[in-house]
Length: 614
Image (cartoon, one colour):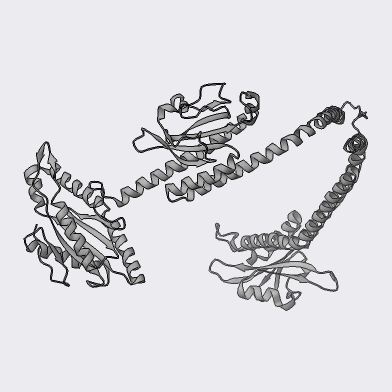
């Protein structure tokens, strides 16, 4: 649709809306004018009735309605001043005052359904229409009671308010005529504006549209010849500038298409590398052990750096040696381990890159071979700490081809390798942190053994396995004899040293599957999966004899020999639950102490709780 048509349609819609609003207003006036007129008449009639009742109270004279002469003068004055035609009747509907003197003394009988009589009885104001042969169109009347102060009703006032309705109707007609005139004026103005806009704006825009269509079809040589001293002229100049710019851009694009085709392969490779790097980060977050993480790094590094030899080196706990935890395309040039000072990247604190063996100093841990291409070492940082090195290297067909090496190892590829190193270092650091936190939560800090909470969880798990496979489970409870004497004689430092040495002994003299725990104080527990009573008792005896050989020195002084008392219990012979087996082993430990300490006692069943000897 053309702009001129849209403008004309818009003005027509506005005019139609105005017509609708005028019609709605007229309809609303028809509904509300009778209501407003009735309310105004009610207020006027009420005021007249009040004045007829109360006039003369201050001078103690009868009210006006009781004085026929004064009443008639009052009615005539109202008719002259306010054009109000009123009639006053008494309680019997007899007219005692009227604008027509001849009606005085007659009974008022023009009210259909006895509206006046009902108002005199109940005191409610009413409106009604009086119709007669003389006034077939009807006269609008309102009747209001003459109510005395005592509440007694002595008659009513009947007032005509047809003139008020006619006056309001005339005002409504004037308003409708004014709205009609405005509507025609707006319609003519709208068509005039549409015609003017069409001539001054729409025509130049049509020319610009045709020029743009030519441009979209590839015609960049035809200039846009719309010259006007207004906004459309400015727009034409802007399109002309755009045409020239697009022409130049098109020429540039044609020369760049071939270059972009060449770069498409590199872009696809970068997209693949980013996807693999994201997968590597996600997989490393799911790894539960360091070995699993190392295997994941190796598997993805072979895809991320195809054709390159490389390895991830990580510091040992002592930080005096870096060892390869992940290697791919295992070559003789990749060392299994090296000292920190043998890597120039660690010395410099940044990436160290060599394009070939003759272009710069190689790290001492890299073998200098004639077939070696570029070599790069990237420090792996996490939590402001160096945790290792990512090493990459590549061979080349002929030695000394530095330009070939530079093309192979671009700045983009170096940034990608640094990103890989960051992902790997962060994952390894997080895994080390998780392992440290887990050890803190399950290990006793003094002895290095598992704590009581871990013991209870492990006991329940091992019991479930034993029940599922029909196997036995042994438990040994052991307590250091006369431990209080060590603290009293040598001090608490000596007591802590005794506990620590016992913890080291238990870790070094049990099976891999056994679970050593510090139960509390100087009391320890051993959980022996798949151990019957005979094996558990045998292991307890070996522990008792081994502990006796421990020698503890404090400040050059050798402490007294350490002995332990032990209680042995086995599932299922000593109870169906872990608490039952622990209780049985604890009671056996109590009997071992009663036997003189440094003994192993076997659980024989539940016994009443008594005070344990220290």
